[in-house]
Each structure stands twice: as structure tokens, then as C-alpha cells.
Length: 157
Image 1 (tube, rainbow, N blue to C red):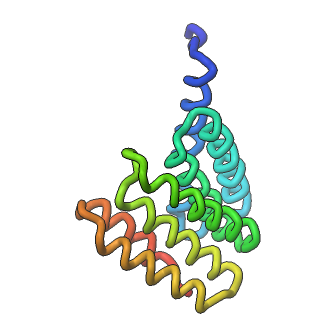
Image 2 (image 1 turned 120 degrees about the vertical axis):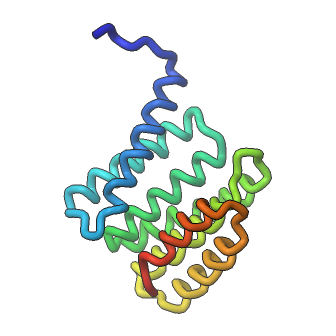
């Protein structure tokens, strides 16, 4: 097999996509192992790095979401809250971009709810879960709404 030739930007994009997509199998497991979660955490950081080199602000918001999700799943509330809050902060600028989808904000709220759940902040968890639900209810496409609802339904405060 011949070596694949690509530009630096193509490499960053390829790695960002591969790492981001590689996280979902772990998040979709009911009870991933500590090793699987640690590997997913490293992939999430790698994706975030590569998106910061070639992605848009929307890509970076989505990368922050993935980091928050992984850390919340690991019950590491401090980094989960950091990345979820960073995602929300960046979302304020990202919402004006063409590639922003109506499902992006519900996912950020969901990550904030999960991060607060990991921290034991039941009231904040409930408040962000309610915001996630309200934003999910306003998603235009049925399939997108079902995906977001499925993630909201996977956890409790």
C-alpha cells in the first residue's frame, strides 16, 4: 500500500474526525471499562487539538462537548464542568455560524447537566437538563430530536 500523501490541514482534519468518531462507541456502552474511558478521553483531547488547527468554532464547541461527556462519565466533575462551560461560552459565537445546527445547543446543555450530576449538584443538573429538554423539543428534524432525546434519557440528576 502506498503512503497516503496529504497536507498538514488534511492531516489535522482526518485525525480530528477519526478521533471524534472513535469516542462514540465508548459513550454508547452501558458500562465502559476504565481503560476504554481513558482511551476515549485521550481521543477527545486529540480531536480538540486537531479541530483547533483546522476546524471552525462549531467544531471546537462539539469537541468541548465530547470532553465534557467523557469526564462526566469518568465522574471527574472539575474537568467535566470546565469543558462544558467552555463549550457554552464558545457556543455564543458559534450560534451565528452557518454550520451550527439546532441540535448543538441541546447537546451543550446536556453536557452541563451531566457535569453537574458528576459534581453532585442536583439543582444545577436539573436546571440544565430542563434547558436541554426545552432546546431538544424545538429541534426541527424528527431524527435529530430523537438522538438528542436519547442522550437526555440516558442519565438522571
